[in-house]
Amino acid sequence: MSDLSRYFFYLFSLLTIGSALAFVTRKGPVPAALWLVNTMFALSGLYVLLDAPFVGAVQVLVYAGAIMVVFVFVVMLLNLGRAGDRPDLRGIGGQLTAGVVGAALLALLLAARRGDAVLPALVPSSTSTSNVVEPVAQLLFTDYLLAFELTSIVLLTALVGAVVLAKRRTAA
Image 1 (cartoon, rainbow, N blue to C red):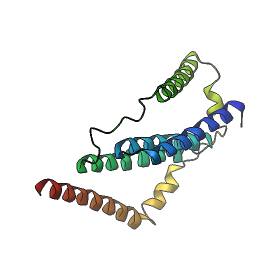
Image 2: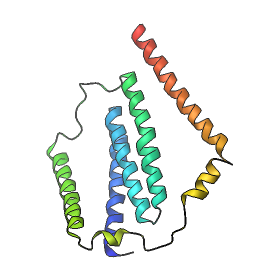
Image 3: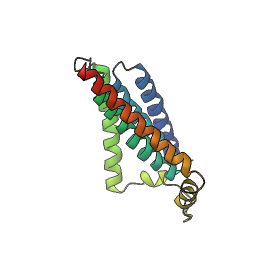
Image 4: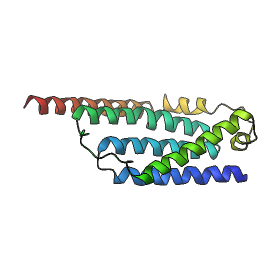
């Protein structure tokens, strides 16, 4: 592992731990959900650095994408997020942290645009062209099809339950 890859590994690790701590310390459900999405993105970065780009993409698509959208939709439907909640990053510490992270990401973007040798160190060294998705899809849609479909039914049931609870609350 090169020095730059090690740096990004520690960076994504700290982002994951910090975001997870922010997730469990939020009082409101919407800020907590957003911190959980940030945790999922940082985990995806770790997977990519560990030569597992397919797992990183699935992490973003399934967890940070689909499940968190459903979660935020249910939170909004049940009206659990109050407008009077205190914002999370009003203090000077939060603003400075956001500024430093933004500046670091901007520097990385500019270095990549100039063509510096920053990002090639992060690309996996293996050049195998084997298809990683096909064996996973084969198992998912043959051996584990029932579990896959049952999961979708459980998620649909949870969404319908949230709608029923929200409708009952407003009608009373």
